[in-house]
Length: 69
Image 1 (cartoon, rainbow, N blue to C red):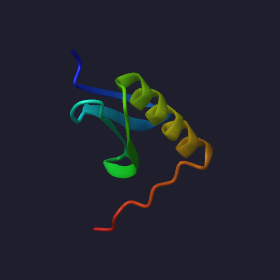
Image 2: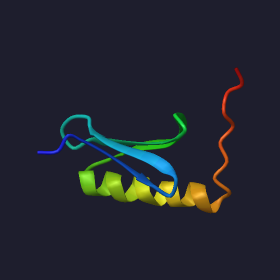
Image 3: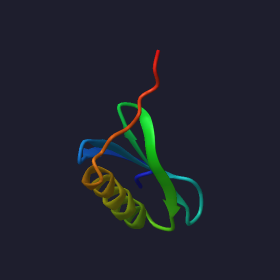
Image 4: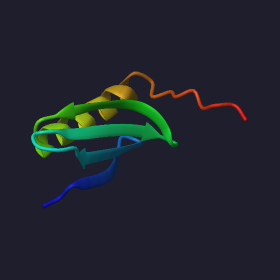
């Protein structure tokens, strides 16, 4: 059974992780910076939601303010 999946889509890194019974967390980052995250009841739901959030981020200009050193 898959408990962690990572991929790249729309210029974002997407990760889906198992977090217990009926809980899957998803996380989107760009260049290591948090863009969006959430939870879903199934791995498929988490993957679909993460993909939609990555596309929405790209469609809205896809800008992330990176921290200044």
